[in-house]
Amino acid sequence: MSVVSRWKEHLCNLLNRPLHDPPDVLVAEAEAAILDADIDTHPPIVLETYRAARRIKAGKTPGACGIYPEYIRYGGHTALTALNELFVQVWKQEVVPCDWR
Image 1 (cartoon, rainbow, N blue to C red):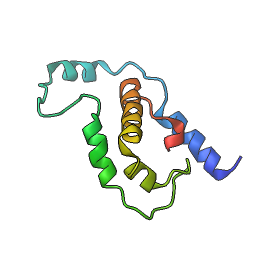
Image 2 (image 1 turned 90 degrees about the vertical axis):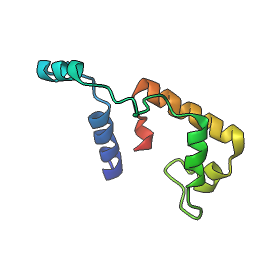
Image 3 (image 1 turned 45 degrees about the vertical axis):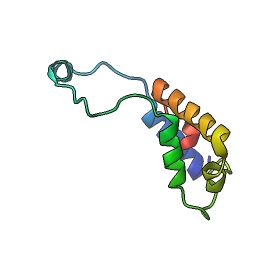
């Protein structure tokens, strides 16, 4: 097994492990906490994906998927909408795909 494969496996196991019941102290503190209405906890919207895409620098090497940053930045409405749908799916599932590490 290559070093990269081993790290990928390790991070997938580390970051996507099953949840355990939190300690009672933590549950009590969470129930007593005051929610901060200024923190947005909704899934990302397409506008946020557009803004992030505009900040991508050109001339970088492609990632592990082989996609050049320019493809994302200049992909247009269809590409950025599809990308946003993927982000929303990850947000709702609360699991980051192993290929993203």
